[in-house]
Image (cartoon, rainbow, N blue to C red):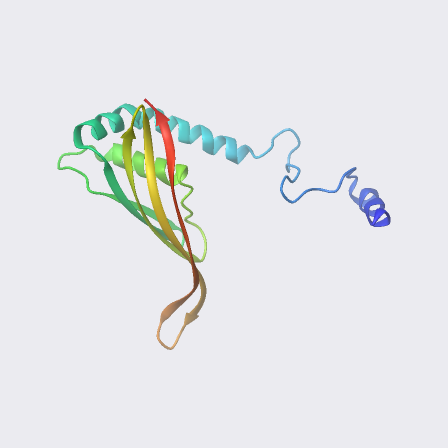
Length: 161
């Protein structure tokens, strides 16, 4: 094994073999800049919707929602009251997609639902989802063929009040 490591070091210049769990960044000193950028955007969204969401939850109680994602799209649905400011709901949709890490790219279908609520001095989301991977397409019946289902559920603290 040490001969292989020596050859790898000779050709790649690496002193240590890379771990799959923590690969070296493509640009030294800039590890996962896309992740930092995503986190910053999520925090900015949180600041935009925080006061509005807390006011809505105090006025109307828990806010149920559902989602569908897959085939390069993700949509959340809320039962919005008449006259609601749509821009806040668009921001809330994007915020929850990021916080719950709802995937939108790939060959799969995911359906889920959840409820945003105030518990003590925190705003939490309780959720459950079912993910099905697309494994084939039946051209005779013109239907997608899915593999086994993967279920997930939990509760996540969005922010403190």
